[in-house]
Image (cartoon, rainbow, N blue to C red; front, side, top):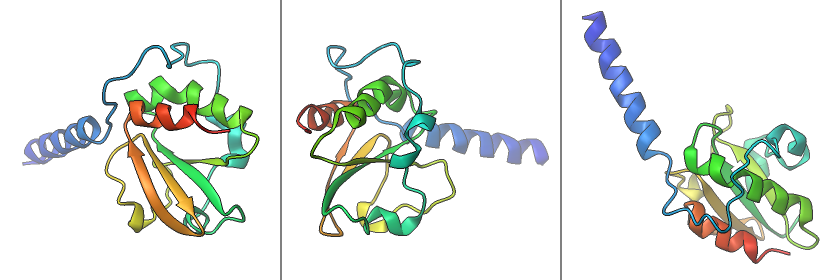
Amino acid sequence: MILKRFLSLLTIGLFVFVVGCTNGSISTTNVNTNNNDYVYSDYIYYQIENFDDQLNRLESDYYIYYYSEVCSACIAIKNDVLSTISNLEEDHLFLFDISRDIQVEPSINLRYTPTLAYISDNQYVEKYVGADDILEILDNLN
């Protein structure tokens, strides 16, 4: 009985892990393959720390990058995301680690990581799912 329950939970966990991370087809021309250059802990200022900060920031327009450190697509584009944050002069990009104990804003309807959500005037406007779509948006930020 315990073994059946354990195997059921393991199967569900593996299913969520596999389905919950989407990368589309990762374009290797944009992806830095050395993922040890940047670390999320160096970007604490950009981390969303509570539920309200998702839609209630001082900036009127910004993006939130929803990621997981165990998502293969998130790992593949981590350096691109973090280097973009380092180089932004006009646009604003914040980070949201879904493994933390913070509820995701329901209007974003987050189903996969990585996801990039665009927020304007305290309202969710649009989201981009998967590495390819996110890299395309990041390339156009200033």
